Amino acid sequence: MSALIDPDLLFPVEAGARLIARQLYAGVAKLPIISPHGHTDPRWFAENANFSDPAQLLIVPDHYVFRMLFSQGVRLEELGVPSLDGSSVETDGRKIWRRFAENFFLFRGTPTRLWFDYVLSDVFDITEPLSARTADAHYDRIAELLARDEFRPRALFERFNIEAIATTEGALDDLRWHKMIRESGWAGRVVTAYRPDAVIDPDFEGFAANLDQFGEITGCDTGAWRGYLDAHRARRAYFKSFGATSSDHGHATAETANLSDAAAEELFNRIRRGSSEERERRLFRAQMLTEMAKMSLDDGLVLQIHPGSWRNHSPAIYKKFGRDKGFDIPTRTDYVSALKPLLDCVGTEPDLTVIVFTLDETSYARELAPLAGVYPALKLGPAWWFHDSPEGMRRFREMTTETAGFYNTVGFNDDTRAFPSIPARHDIARRVDCAFLARLVAEHRLAESEAHELAQELAYGLAKRAYRL
Image 1 (cartoon, rainbow, N blue to C red):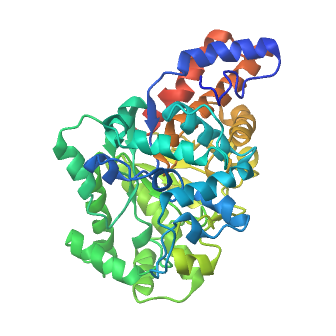
Image 2: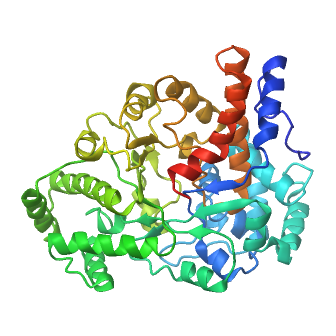
Image 3: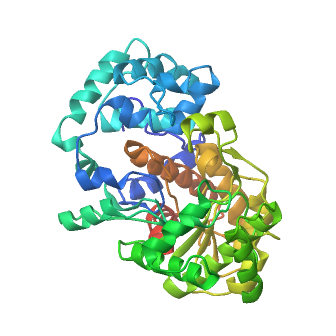
């Protein structure tokens, strides 16, 4: 382990349990990484060009980084975050890096601090902590390494021991970068995932025009309900041809519906005409989750539901900088009643996999674990987003295991745009899980042989099987 990361990081304080955790971790530390859901850019792997500079790689695209700095008065323009209106932002990578470094103390105690220390030490072999004093030296070191061939995206992919990674593309994406990857002959497995929010959510910007483009791309009549559903089937098949094994849905709630064909068609017609009724727009989103689940039963794509985020909470930031700029805020989320229509329709199907995530931790023990603990189609996604942290991962295991067990969960996924942090995130998850298992062994609730088997499953096997990778 590196100078910035202690070998016993996140292991139990008690000596006996710590020894067990060490032994469990030794068995999984070097396992390949399955990264079944994330937001890395497929263009990186297609073009395999050198990353431009440390700031553009590690700061500018990472909302975990700039939301904290913004909360302390650092403007997004100072961090090089591109504006939609073309107004001036900082473009000097060294200046952006210095601004970040002088405020790095703000991340003490956060998972971002852990990930960043991992990246500095394990990826770039830096031994001194980042600060205003070391900013320039660290920048120069990283910039020098990024210019080398062994730090190109494909080389890092292989160095990180990534077996498979899934990016996430919208329904209107032409998947040109995935096509380029495939035609290059490179052996790295980079697949896509179908994200149709832009043509499912009536509140998505440009929704009507998106549906028109959806029809043009697929040759289906997206002015009619049946043609609209056929367009989804066509795009799902196209995404599958580029390796997709899952679809992903970032709805505001987990609400589902199961209308009759006639009622669904009537609702679609009102939505297509531009319904201003919030109730109808919510019902359409709810119906489409069930429609996607039925399509998954037919074509085998795993259905991921990522609900419960109030997206773009600040209209001023959204207007100036667009989506994914740190202003997505968790909300209370209902699952028991919200998912019932979908589960009534397909929940007992053992060949279907619906993976549900949450930003509302209060629902783990009360709702999600009991649901996943009985419905064959339902699995629990790992601690997500604000909770893919050491404490969040611990809480997830503590609140779900007794009711859902381990095998109704799907391992870990990093859900990140920050490519160099992927090994760090997986390592932290493996450490937290080994610590949890070690406690069960120390309390004589689990045999050590079982813990070793479970550690392998949590680090690798569950994700590989759940996502059909």
